Length: 213
Image (cartoon, rainbow, N blue to C red; front, side, top):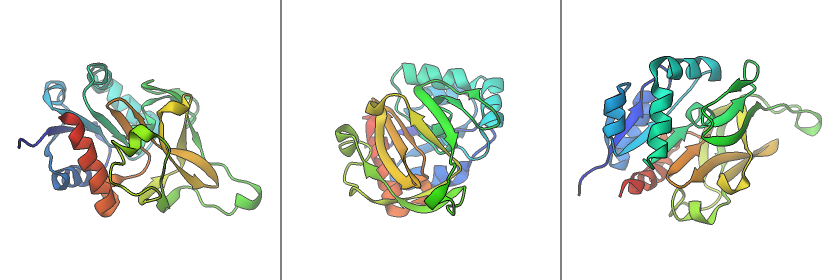
């Protein structure tokens, strides 16, 4: 059986090496690239990210990779956004002042802000947390054969608020109940890091690779 070719988008930011290694463990033939033609020719795309919203978006737009992402999603290529790569898919973020994102999903990205009983919670939210699956479709695709309530690894100060509840694949709790994964057709996004989440994270990546078939 041919291994799916997965393009990990290199836009000058992100934990590319660990994501590539995890995808290889999941069974992918991985290409880390910033070349539009190479990315478009792959079977699937993964958009990882760490860092800040504004400089990441600037790098994407300066390189033209924002258009590559939008075109590939429009052509129904399987796509997975991770952490900051997930947040950039939304309409806007309040990080550094309100800024427009890629607009693949309606909604905004906002910073955790706690008061009262939750005032002692630290930001960023960092460490292992449960993920509760909300979508029956996601149970049979993104989270197939992954027990509900499984733990994944998070590192983030901002969280997404999708406009359409139908795209929410999973939620997690940290002071509030927030969206930790989205899925719409072949477009998936995770606030957590599957590449840092052990065998459960590898299983999710394997599920993503199956979207190429």
